[in-house]
View 1 (cartoon, rainbow, N blue to C red):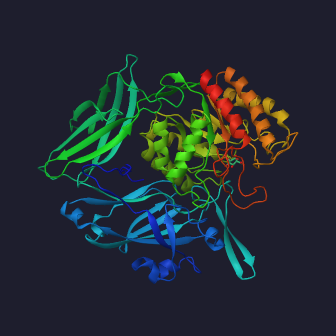
View 2: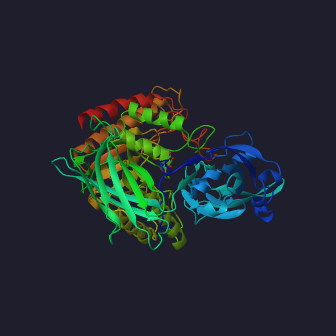
View 3: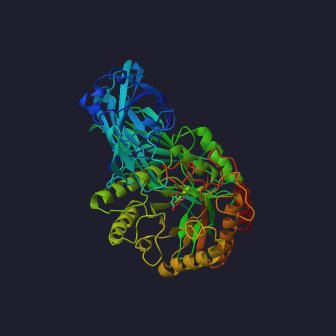
Length: 610
Ligand code: GCB
């Protein structure tokens, strides 16, 4: 893992940001998966290699066209785009960076025929200084090869299978996780500039005293090299949410580096939605780095001041116990697949607030930074999950990649007040004999990166055989009583749920929350009495869970409920999925099923009680 930072590109007096989103040239690597490498497609325009189509970025490529070959493609696809680098950027002596928010699953990037980046693991950003590869005042070209193949050593895991067809052998992708393996350039592509000596990374943690003093611990890291006769100065201005200056500090550049403490009187804390009149209060740190011979670099980073604590029975935010009312979700919608889309994100947060939720889990991979920004600003608590889902076939190689995904995630999201826990896995085969030492390593590693937040996971293994819970701070569990287990029998829910949650707590003496429960529901299917797949059944199943949750809440160790799922989403083709997974309380088009109204009553009632 590289030690440099991955700050989100923001323009400032010293930084220009240019979006490379839009239509890119696109083609599948066919018939030979490696033909693009053999014929070196990155040496010239992609359109010179053969026929291309136009593909939107950001977007998954799978559902944009009506071509099944594109939707179900296994292996490499190629993208390219031409763009200008202004001549003025050279005169100003800028460093030029190229940054991808996420390419799934693996990417190789060329700039003007030079290979500049290799990145594996989707859902996470990567960047590189490309100053020496660009041509100023002229047309430049980026070529990207994207591979969607998942194997036993990728995160998440998958396998290739050969099948025989009329036209001979064919390779298909298989995986056990329950969402479509969308691929492509999923998030925005930015080119941006910094001065030669620049703010590379910032670490922020926060605290406050009972008499209203807010405390920000900061550590600023710079990149680029100083000449021997050059000195470095750094200052931080804290602005409130009306952009009025609250504080100004000059940082000493001593042996400790650029680190220290800022105190803010009459602090306004960051509170979750419906826990305070002003949820999601954010200050801005305006960091200015000056050197003798270069232009100053200015970077503004939002910061919310709050504390997170946990005991063996509770989870506290600003020393107040918090009860999570939330969802498991997906980045998923019609046509764009996992492509980041501001209209969709805005609608989703509007629905989250309408329903009175205060939290969600980024099941089963990190979500776009733009989505996380909304969480910070609206006070929505996020259980931030790495892309490890259904982990099986434990190996050292897998462990390395799994921990890399967490390192990249924590580097990206460490300063976000909305992030309240790190989820290190969803439903791993944690009864496997190798799971114990594997997850012990993962958990220890995460603690070395961040010990200010608890770690959790969504466990599906039985309490008795699970090996993962012992390594967590907070236990999350997924259970489908009266769905996969005894479908139709909602009468088992209260007994089983109360029993199991209590067993989790008793085994580990840790707080427990339910990370998944739910029922597939076809909107518009009504049956009385309730029957599986009907809107009535989803409501009945939820009501029984609510009763169990209320009993459990009285026992104090139970800290939250997250229904599966926020909205319907696409999965692999299977006979148990009718047009995808239908456990959403909203449809895939983000309209409510009856269950959304039912959940809304509960979440608002809970919000008022607490
Ligand atoms: C689970 C998985 C989730 C699935 C869900 C289901 O346990 O964590 O990815 O979508 O069950 O609906 O089967």
